[in-house]
Length: 326
Image 1 (cartoon, one colour):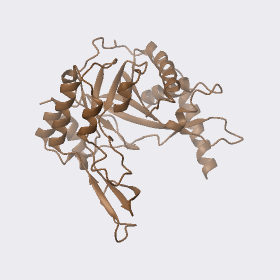
Image 2 (tube, rainbow, N blue to C red; image 1 turned 90 degrees about the vertical axis):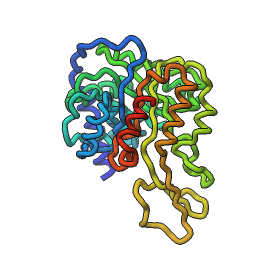
Image 3 (cartoon, rainbow, N blue to C red; image 1 turned 90 degrees about the horizontal axis):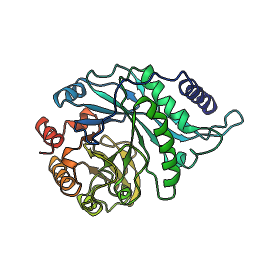
Image 4 (cartoon, rainbow, N blue to C red; image 1 turned 180 degrees about the horizontal axis):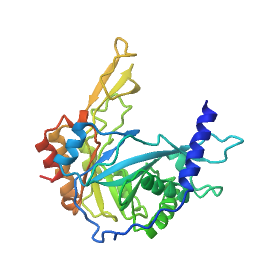
């Protein structure tokens, strides 16, 4: 079954990645580097909005939806396959895109895939870029003005990742499409990726596997330590966490994550740590960002992510205040 699944995955990559080149987009890329607008990530394996999520987009006049299309992961090399990396967890489209919302396709690249992606056997920058553009055309995602790469690159893989970004950017430019990428807090001290803009990810700041961690989603002390009150070399937008989860430990050993209250598998003596970011913490986070990141008050806030269960923990007025930097 694994071989059959792999062959289907590779066939999908070949068909979508090598089909006819999409037509050039008829728009101009923004020149000023800043473009305020309410935004939200969508990070599920099926695109299907419930009534609450549709209402959220309308109520808060969400301008951009950052939609994860697929992950890039290492492949199982077999006699019938010489791809080093393949797409995985491709989103299934179960309904049309919401009207009036710009879609920004996002691709997540695992660190293990990144170590393989500059192999001379295949031009993965070309294959992945074409797959993104053709999926956008096939699924009617509208006028694509930006594509985003999400990768937790390290100092050891920085050169490989930057080379990949340059190649993807070159392939998007003929269509007037910008390339953005995610930036982790520690990466602020490194060279800037060769892209048009970045999104500073202001979550997952602590160690999730450490039983002594208070809240791995957000620790304001960690944010304070990384922000140095100096400009970054790219225009930035800012991603804030609105999600929650349960972290499970047994004998001070990390056992896993639950997005709903866990029950199966728990034993007497196990500990479950609930993690959530309150509205008050989000306001403090926004104050720190505005104080320490020049121009942040004019940047877009991107909430992670569009999920009615998590977003129900905030009132409409609280969401409005976060989006507007109040």
